[in-house]
Image 1: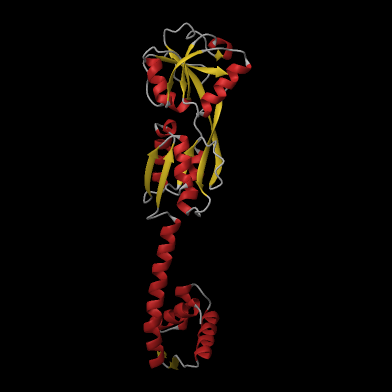
Image 2: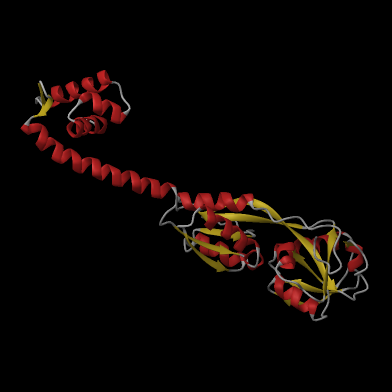
Length: 306
């Protein structure tokens, strides 16, 4: 006995007609008759009697129908539950992302995702890249989005995009008239640096060293937003990612592209020991499609991209 046989039997009971049951189930009449005969043969029971008024259910058929109804109802609940899983109803995703992506990019990505899957619950943490890697490795978050220089074998990394950078400098700075800044322009400049472990800083300093450029760096900060705040206050110039530059209007800062271009790889990470849910897979796929816009190389009057 299988579910389809039960479904056909129930339809015959409710319609009291093989012909009407066939119409309801979008089957041929011979197919319904054959299914009923197979079911009766398997059970060794006579379920219906043919009379001049049509089919008449036996006592055994009525008892079987009572149980079949519960099975069909339960299967309906199961189908609904599976449909809810497919549409991410009741799903929950915990995400940790580096601060630069938490200011603008992640809220925009999340807004689009929630419009697609309004029943998903999302929880966010803004943490440094090393801290995000640690949270993923320990299974405390479902998804980590950040730089990921760690080789922790418990973390699966998927590169989703490269985050571009721009140079931030006070509006009245002597270099502000240039549409593009190059490594040689940094010679002798007071540069506000990011923390030593930051990939953006590492790539920037490598570029300067290869060009024989020396800078003055007396201020070190942890976040790109702090670099912008320091530049805004007139403490020097600095290199920041484009998402931090776009996060808010910085009244006293001009942003200029830097050459050679410095881009920081961004990864979506998850714990290898924890099978990703459908919700997690879809969130990562969605984030990977939402690549930050490139910086417009022709800045507007305020240094922001058009």
